[in-house]
Length: 118
Image 1 (cartoon, rainbow, N blue to C red):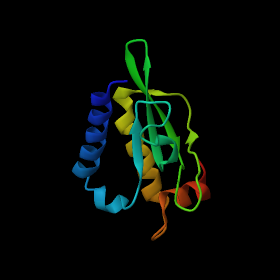
Image 2: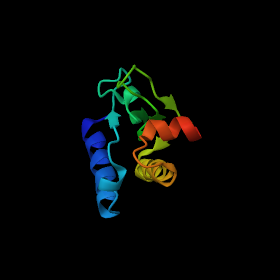
Image 3: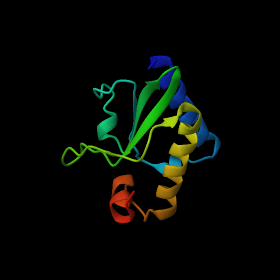
Image 4: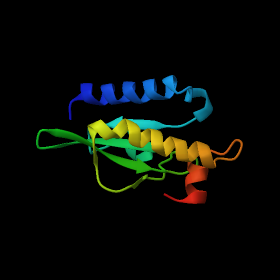
């Protein structure tokens, strides 16, 4: 997967949260995007990980949730099939909105995920 595609997705995600005034409400959240299945950008250990895949001539992303390196190394779990690049920003926004709707004060993304499940 082309590096410029991953950068474009990262910029689109940040722009979406900035425009919706959610950047500061979200707080600390690790989101790693990689185009390398060897985890070059450590998408496996992010709260939300995106692995770019190329299927034919189309770009897709596999989403993982719940990775961590804070107290012990935890690999995120895949949440279904890879989705097209056109849907990835909306998917990340939906995941973050579920987190924001369910979090208690000072509760981290992974704490909410453990409590409510994928």
